[in-house]
Length: 82
Image (tube, rainbow, N blue to C red; front, side):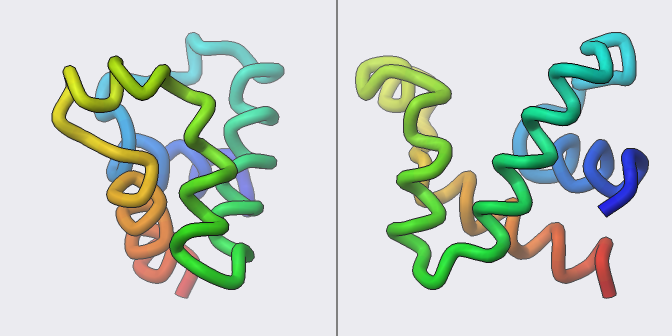
C-alpha cells in the first residue's frame, strides 16, 4: 500500500479527521497494523491486532469494537486496493 491508500482506508474505516500531520512514523505504524488486519485469516484475528487501540471501557464508550473496525478496514481496503 502507498501512503495515500493507507490514509484513505484509515480515514474511511477509523477516523475521518486523521491527516498527514499525524507524522510519517505514526502512519508507518498504522500501515503495518492495517496490513496485518487485511491479511489476518479471520475477523477475530484481525480484531485482535487492533484491540489494544482502546481499553475495553473506551470501546464500549465510543460504541464501537475492534471487530467492527477490522471489518470496516477490510471492506475499505477491498475498495481502495482493487
